[in-house]
Image 1 (cartoon, one colour):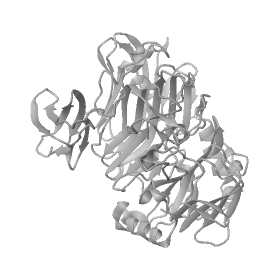
Image 2 (cartoon, rainbow, N blue to C red; image 1 turned 30 degrees about the horizontal axis):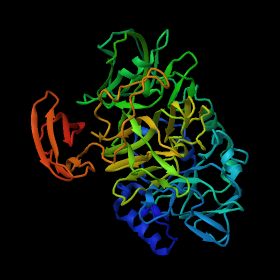
Image 3 (cartoon, one colour; image 1 turned 180 degrees about the vertical axis):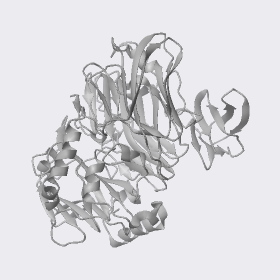
Length: 631
């Protein structure tokens, strides 16, 4: 992984044979678990078929691989006092300058480029495969990313000024990508995966496009027409129609296993009120788990709060009649129970049609998870373009932290913004397993979601969408699905986004739903839901609470780690203060506690199976975390 991120994501380093060797050793040393299964091959046809195969997401990848990214993120700081990772000069940065152009990517194979994004493509991209001295493929960058070359839409397209290519580009031994052109000051991402040594992959050549024309047309039709069923005709359908009364819980469906939910349609004859969609939880429990694997506000699961706007993606969509449709594959061994838990004071008539089919479990089959979390009234940091960094105390905001083994497959971000100021200058940062630093570094929030330049134009694509946007002020929703580029992890997955505004500070509600698959019991930082999580504004500028004072403190942070127990991180208060932590069973019985300074962990190995709540307090600030012991 000839990417500075592998060692230090914040310092630009030149490509050297030593760094190539280091990464090869990292892979062979076990960073990719299951390397013994890596002797199998991955064909070009398989890579194409997986782009439209939602059921394949439920199986942990084999052969395994590690996801990474090369990008133009800032590699230098304007001042010694400014942390490099929070600078914002995220364009025109490369690994090296070569005689033929600027080095964008230099990766040891076997691997696959899964996604290329840019906001201002120009010039040409030169691909060198498998150590060849001569270029293997040269193509105009704009043509590759906008669908005007041999790779057409929907594999390559423009969405709200963002240029994307999702077409798989495999290589057997090595891949180097060079930009050649007169205007190298560009933003770019190149997402890729690296397989263990010994995995058999073909090396891309343009003849693969014509040789697989029929399959490419078939997959392209599915991605372009997400209304058509993508998984065949389901075997069984179960329908629930009834009233969901205020402050009541309704069991909508009980399914016997083994099987898998492959589609779920939710509708109401008169549509739904936004308050109901936010405060009525969708809970789906697989195989008798003590805590539901899916626990998300009904509307936020479908990206329907506060507006049920029509959009179409491969796993989720809303039709013109406001029917909300999910095509996530959700396997279960013994059974699945779907409940609606209404925390609102409204009553609604709900119709749910669940399609399921038999499913054969393997050693790699995982359960589907969905979680929601919202932080209201978050004050953003402002960016001073003259020096390219945040002026306020910089910080990352958690999107998703997982402990366990699984695959991240999708993210929904829902923002309410008080001011007419762009809120999305912050970069995405993803750390997978035991890497010493984020292996995936972005260049801006909208860049992760496939668009660019703070565009407020609604759009839909099979893998990313902006279903609605009031403008820079008001409500906006973004979706990004990792269907063609799933991100597996074996022990942990940490996804953060910087909170940063262009030019001036603002105040936002920061809500996010996350979708992933996991083996066994996975613990996340989203497991607890509070009143803040279900808070909703009546319209885009109504119901605004008073501005809150921005402080560098925040509340104490809690995280459940299967190996370490409850991990406590003290807030950055001045002067420092102690953190008190109490652990309760779900019935309210106190089972453990500790008060200490700084950061520490509390072992949970002695706890019996069940649902627990950890409550932390420091300096009047609190944080609660729900976690599950299931062994």
